[in-house]
Length: 193
Image 1 (cartoon, rainbow, N blue to C red):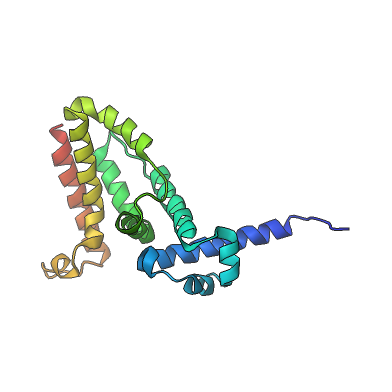
Image 2 (cartoon, helix red, strand yellow):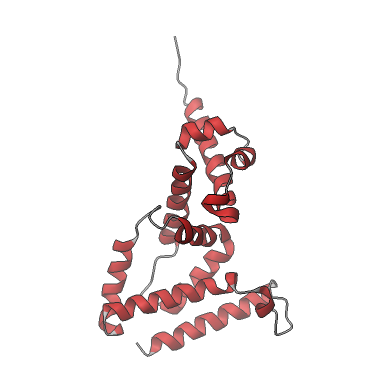
């Protein structure tokens, strides 16, 4: 007689977690088109067959990673229409600690914008709340797009530009200075709203 003690479920959950973690790293580095299931399997201490049995296809795995990464971002750093400078600072901090999230998000937009979670209803709620002070819904959308882009810009600006002042852009001091500038710029943009 088979006795189920939950160990198999825990093992399956642990395997799935290792696969998703390795896949997030691979997709962040190479996108969907460049990612290889054999590298994901090696990174997860798993095998290709098991990945396909869990997820069915590389695209399904990419969709799962998108859901996981982008939902974590949306839940951890929700748009705060009452404190946009604070939100932009927290968004910058999140991207700094979780660089895979921003890279995977960009790969999504480049390769498969239809995959992953649809946070439109969340954003629509924030846009509606901002529309009265921003003047119109499209102005609120444009402002959020601009602020979101500003929070990500440091991570995608050419290294040569980031160090053109003679500083090392990878030091804590320089990154903190950029964050202060980012929050101040957001405050200047939003105080007029």
